[in-house]
Amino acid sequence: MLRHNVEERATEIGAYIIEHNATVRKAAKHFHISKSTVHKDVAERLAKINPQLHKQVKAVLEYNKSQRHIRGGLATRRKFKRTQGNK
Image (cartoon, rainbow, N blue to C red; front, side, top):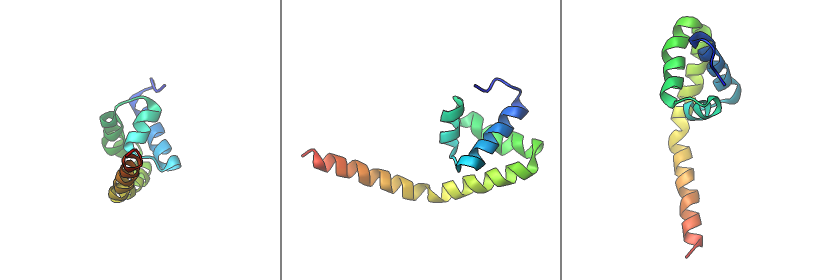
């Protein structure tokens, strides 16, 4: 889907992350690229291309990082409830 140049791809990924409050994993899945590519695009390349957008993306990713332990706990809870229901 994203076969443009690197600057365009980084900008599109950054806009997607902001618009959808997306995680790196969600953005990678949406654009059919690896998580490491998304991370490199938004952490390194976007800072040079568009510092303002980079700042916004960084804020979203920091928020997602601060919430991941909660999401992980909820996922574990759902899994536990599923396995307990099968006994």
